[in-house]
Image (cartoon, rainbow, N blue to C red; front, side, top):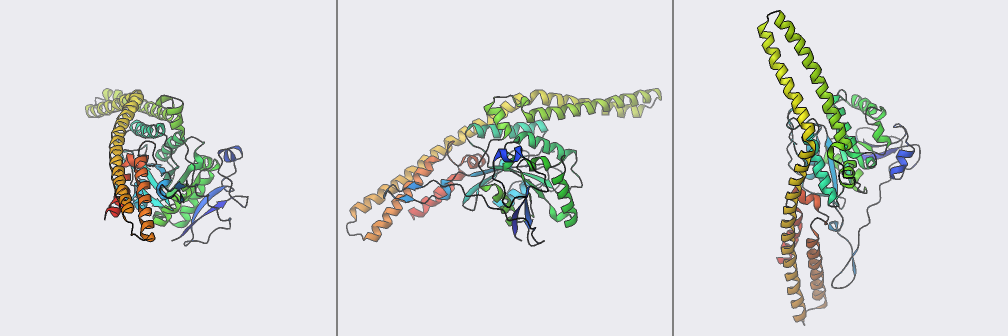
Length: 452
């Protein structure tokens, strides 16, 4: 299959991606949106083809031996970090494994496999190094919504404090769902609070599992999601895009390309926690979670009231069996209410503990990465010194041989500098979070090729 993105708009060209453009003059969804089409399954619409964004400018480097300007490599560009969000079972981990070759846990049933933030192995696409970050949904089967928020918030705040922002966010939704029920709505509301409005230009809403519905049903559901205010219309009008994932690698790559050249921006919760120094309970996401917790407490209290009425009736009827069953259910409901109340009270302290543990782990990882980077850089320098010594003593070497040795010296010098750039200020921060020293593997491979 092949896929092409199209701009649905009145103008002949898609608008520039400026935050103020979409918010100051929003258009309706039928007039203004990006659409990713399967061009093998149906003829493309008549909308003008989208103009791709320009590739980010690559900084040139100067040769340490000849002084000439050298073309930049993929490693000279910052990595593209993309967060994957959505409800449990929407195919987030499957998408990540498909495009990155990772092996994150994938749920086959009702139980969630992603119960913590996970960073997949980096991969290259169109000359960029891409890192995908898997997050649990706010309907996780093994963790409360409070636990999920504190994990996501700690990860995002810690990375932002160290100068790292996301290039974009993919929000996954099952097109196979008959309706956007309470779970999906709660997840999307939390997603909106995490992102805020200013970063919606870097968001792509991904509809998934198209193979589970017939094309007409899928088209109708997609159109409803795009045009209804209670669904995705508000975020699309503010700059977000919408794309179909057809469960294939080319489809996944086309979706990533919608974000690949974005200018990274902080999410709203990052600004609130780091720039504005808010407690997590006072952030938009924290307030939304507390509203949901309070609503659940009120529902449970109403259910307890009804149970007590039934229990009083059972007592009057001398129905001991029913009375015992109602007592058990009442106690269970009371424990649920207490759990919700405790979750709300512990949100701030649990978030700080989670963030402290993450910072401690990152500090150790950075230390190990720095030590390994220094070791590799020293090895490169040793090779450079050997080549320079050989060059000086090779009076009979031809000009071609000397040029080749100079080129090797230059490459080794650049790799040594790049190795020492790894760390909190380097371009591999999210990769380092995902796996200790994983980003140094290419450097080791490069060194081995020169040592052979």
